[in-house]
Length: 170
Figure 1 (cartoon, helix red, strand yellow):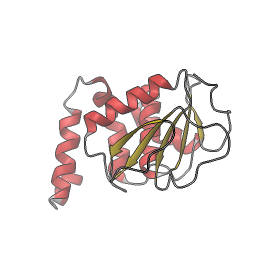
Figure 2: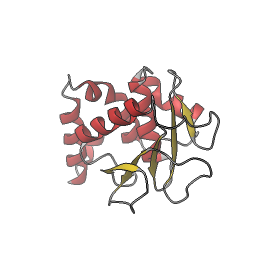
Figure 3: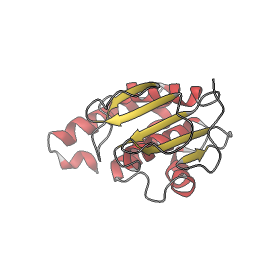
Figure 4: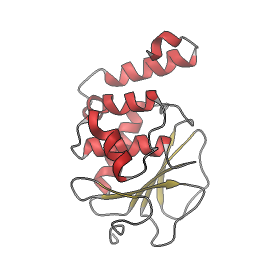
């Protein structure tokens, strides 16, 4: 286990507990130490990296294909961030990455209704790009605990939207 990220380093989000997680675009690796665990959010698998990583199918500007697997991966990233350098990355480092960071903030104790604002203040002001990504964060508390039908509700909304039913997005 290595040292934590440098507070205030490029893309490093300090959670209320003091855990540090780096968000970034996977296109450019910032200078400094390598992560020990990476969570990559993309429609297709990304190129292999030299550190342990996990890929989640998550198309650009959309929601994750499997919300339950996403909750599991985010719980793993949050737990590992207590002792390891953890990063979250998507193509641009804002929408999917910001959404995941906001969910990590919820796991760290930030109320779901305040998590997007927290990430925008402490990570990037344009993080969490779409209304459905913001809604995903608000509902993530129930998904993270596996005690509510949130996962089914999010999945239904996602599948319905894919079929073109706009009423499901309101």
